[in-house]
Image 1 (spheres, rainbow, N blue to C red):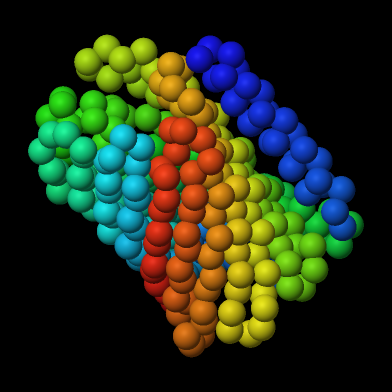
Image 2 (image 1 turned 45 degrees about the horizontal axis):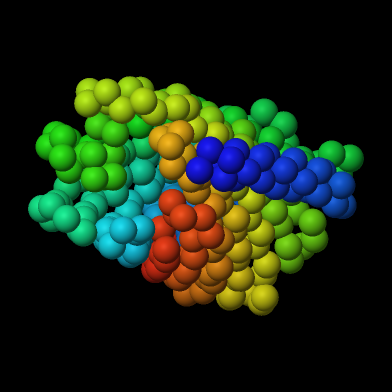
Length: 267
C-alpha cells in the first residue's frame, strides 16, 4: 500500500513537471468557465460580474453518492483584481448512515494578475489566495463519511494561461492547501493540487474543453485523486453559455464518475 501511494505521488510530480515544460515551450484573453474547474489567469473586468450555476452528480467509491447545486460569483474590483465566492448545496447520500442535505464548504477567493501576456511573453500569471468556510453541518459521523473536515482551511493557487492560437488556449493551476486538523483527531496532511485544461473554439457558438485534475489525498493512508474531464459549451447569446461535462476517475480514491450541466452569465 505504501509503495502504491508513493508511486501515485511520484506520478503526480512527473505529470506536473512535464505539463509545465510543455506549456512553456509551445508557442485577446482565454476564458475558462464551467464545466472546467481549472481557473483562468484573467480576473473579471472592473465592475463586471460572472455568475456560474450548475448541477453536479457524483458516484463516489464504496457506493456513496452526492448531488450538488453549485453557485459561483466573481466580481471585478479594479484592474487585474477580482473577488469570488463558491457556495454548493449538497445532497449527501452515503452508502451507510443518514442522508444529509446541507450547505457545503464555501470558498472565498481573489485573483491578482501580476504578469499579463504580450507578444514577447505570451504567458499570463496570476496568484489566487483562498479561504474555506466549513459546512454548518456539525454531526461528526456525517463529516467523517466524507462530506467535509468541518474545519477552516486556507491556501493559494498559482495560475498560468496561454493562447496557443486564436482557437486554442491552455490553463494550468498549481495549488497548495493548508489543512486544519479536525476535532476528531484525524491525522490529515496539507494538499498539493495540479490541473491543466485546454479549450478549443469549434465555431462562434461551440467550444470543446478538456481537463486533467490531480490532487494529493489529505489522508496519507489513502490513494491520491486523479481524473479526466471532457465537456462542451454552447453560446446561447452574448454573455450566456450553456455547458455540460463528464469526468471519469482514474485513481481508486477519485469519484467513479461525475456529470454536470450548468449556465454561465457575464454581465
